Amino acid sequence: MDSESTRQLRQGLFGLWCAPIFSFMVLLGWLGIAHFWLPAPADLGPEATKEFFTVTHRTGMIWGNSILIVACVFLVIASIQFGLVLAEIEGRRPLWSITTTVGGILIALIVFLDATFWISAAYRPEAGADVVVALNDLSWLGFLLGWVFLSLQMVASALVTLGDRSPDPAIPRWVAKLSLVGAVLLACAGGPAFTHSGPFAYHGLLAFYMPMAIWGLWLDAHAFYLSRALRRSLAASNSKVHPRPVPSPSTS
Image (cartoon, rainbow, N blue to C red):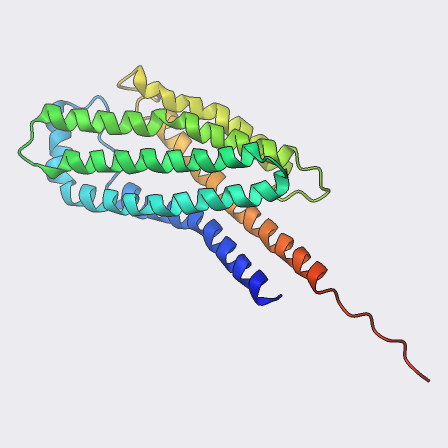
C-alpha cells in the first residue's frame, strides 16, 4: 500500500474510532462520574433535586459533564467519517449519507448544550431549587426529545445499506433492518414530555435506558463495519493502481 493510501486509511480509521472513544467518554464521564447511570428522578422534589446537583454530586456533575462536552468533538468527527464512507457506497448525490452526517452533528450540538445546562444546575450551590429543577428539566427534555435526529440518522444509514447491491455489503442488511426497528423504538424517548414517573419518565426504562442502549449499539456497530469496509475499499483501490506483476515464463 503506497503512502497516500496508508494516510487515507489511518485518517479514516481514526475518524471511525472516534465513535467508540465517544462511547467510552460517555460511560466514564456522564454515566459514571456525573452519576447519570442513576439520575435524579423526574418526580423528585425541588429541594431534593437541588441537593442532588449542588451537594451530593456537585463535583462529579461538573467534571463528568465537562468530559461529555469534550466527547462531543469525537462524535462530530465520527459522524463526518460515517458520511464519507457511506457516500462511497451510495454514489453520486449521496443524500442519505449527508443526512447521516448532519444528524450526528446536530446530536453532538444538542448533547453539548445539555451538558452545559447540567453544569449550570450544579454551578451555584446558593441558587434556588426552582432554578436547578428548571435547568435539569431543560437538559433532559432537550437530550431525550432529540431522538428525532438520532432516528433520522439511523434511517438514513439504513437506506444506504439497503440500497447497496453488492454481494458483500459494507454493513450487513440485518444491521440495517435492526436500525429501522431501533429508529421506531426511539420514539419512547418522547415520553418525558408527558409524564414525571414510570417507564416513560426521563429516568425511566423505556425513555432513557433503552434509547441509550440503542444509540450505543448502533454507533459502535457501524464504526466496526464501516472500518472494515474502509480497509477493503482502500485495498481494492491500491491494487488497481499497483497491480501485481505478471511473472515471466520460465526458460528451460
